[in-house]
Length: 555
Image (cartoon, rainbow, N blue to C red; front, side, top):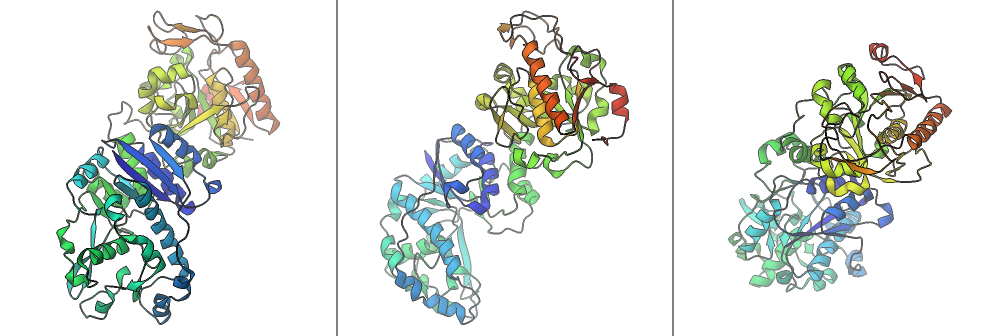
């Protein structure tokens, strides 16, 4: 088993969210326990939905507690390194930077003290790049004898590349490290071992180990500090030239650190995907987005991978394929028309190909019609737990922005732009679903109407919502299909052996009427363009005429 510590803060939450999504996309290859260490008060967490899903899918704990600040006031007040910086040194750390360094050091200090097994520490600028990534690191670490395992970084000292520190994102052995006098070095300084070599013509001063004449747990991050302290204690010498630091191998083949890398996200994926377990230093979030797509949307064989997600060419960024959120989607389609595509038999008489360049919401198993449509809907709503339980793997393969019921979290693995919503008051039409709450309405079409309103659409057009069932029974009763499905556009929709529930048309109509009133109250509308549909609550529209018109809607 391997422990993994994710250290993140308020300002890098978006990157942390993407990294958590990525961690849910890949298999560790070994048992893992995650420690989500948040550096601010929990009230400032904005990615709680992602954290909750992560903790449901992985063994993980969230903490914002750190050890009390052990730095003596004297160390802050009497700081020779600040004197050096004020004198015009090329590198150094001011007071605010040292406080940030101290938070990192206290995070490491916490887990060195509280864990008895090795742990890997990662940050939001990391990218996981292969299945079995943690197993590879764990197995290699088991053959290592050092206190820290990772990318051994070098600097130019006296004309020669010389190991100066382990990269921060490394594996730490707390048992070995607890033998070092960390507490003492939080409260006192000692001479910086690199300082005597700073003016040598063969040394490069622009590096952290030349930041000032003194060193402590307050002055420099622990990736440098532990390296220097370990060798000083092991050899009894404070001279780096006496240290046999090269006896530990550089494992950049497993944990590669390119702090603030100059590589593009595309280059990172092309160079390292499926080969390198962990890359550290990718500040551009697109690297994590591309990795998520690689594992959840690109690496697996998907039936509809060749079909585009339908939308206009000028669609806003929120719906164009990047990682998004329900809050970001709110009102992003203000004034637009959107088509809600039902699953009735009338779809067999409806040419949906003109909707490829329009905004659409598909429902449940609409993917059985994708080959005829030639595109995937912009959005997909799937809320029936029996549908999701039986056909979760199918829905995993779809690229639409998906909204599904929270009850079925475990049935969906592909959480790329997949949002899990709770059911709220059934008698409320939720105009804003940013909090991941909406009403069931006894029909998924009602959920789609709430989504359309949340998006800001001026007009929602129903297509394929026949509101007519040839075979039915007691409302909401669960049954098992005994043959081909005659109630939907495809005979296999609820084909033989599939569990499904009889519709509740009366309650569905009640909710449809509520949705219509809400739309009309703000000058918007719902119209019904279903060919031969039996629903009588909304104004009728001619489908062929609608799809032939310009996209503008007179709101």
